[in-house]
Image (cartoon, rainbow, N blue to C red; front, side, top):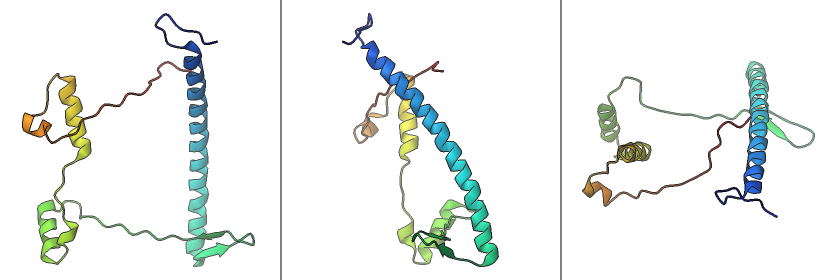
Length: 142
């Protein structure tokens, strides 16, 4: 039988939620420790692979541990973004250049306006989807 608080909220559900919250915190801490150890071991293995010129090792159980190459490119620090985009366009790479808005900055603006009791301009309000999501917060859990 559920116990209700004076507000009508089931206290057994609150107790269970807090128990799960504690378990999640414990597991997150353990997961972070595992990730840290894996990163340390991976660094040592990478160094050994590079030093020995080894691309990978296939174990007897069929598991293959190997170097994985990733390549990233970006604009040079300090380069004017407009000039950079023009260089790309002039060299046949216009498909890489897109004019976009920042969804995270738009959301931040809407949150700021909401906290100040203001709204977006009417023309903008008509073309922006705004939705709220509620979740539980826990403070003071030990």
